[in-house]
Length: 193
Image 1 (cartoon, rainbow, N blue to C red):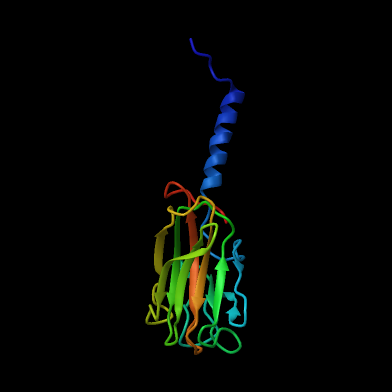
Image 2 (cartoon, rainbow, N blue to C red; image 1 turned 60 degrees about the vertical axis):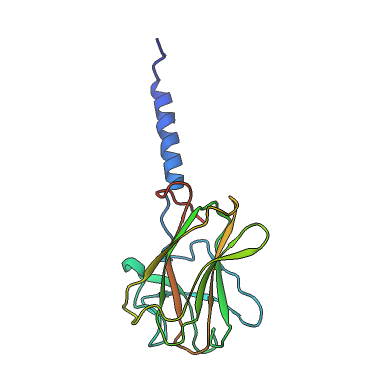
């Protein structure tokens, strides 16, 4: 007959299964407590930063009235004062290296001066734009966030992802993003960045 598993072998097997499940199932990036491993990478005279905010952005008539799906914090391109107030000012928020095949996120683009939000993937040689939306997408701060899902499985297994928000000029152009999910393999598996 076949040998019976010892208690130690069963414990090792269960631990191994739990460890692989935990490493693949991580929480999406809500920005509730930190930048979640993302970094600001914009440079040059028009390079600005994404900001992390709770509940709303500083200017009236633009930005969300809270995070996506009831969360409090989100990140956004600030377009008033000395921030990204001029046409062509931009901010970039970049992930670490990932093997993700699908990216999902929420965005909120309310305000008369909304510019463009794009997602780019680094393929090992250059950044390639995979998605873009321009202009006001919501009609109030309290309007629902829009969820976007992108298949990026055609890129090399090791890649980086960045969000690029570009202003058109004016203080009512705050562009916000929240709840970023990087999925590897199966749809239920997520990877930390």
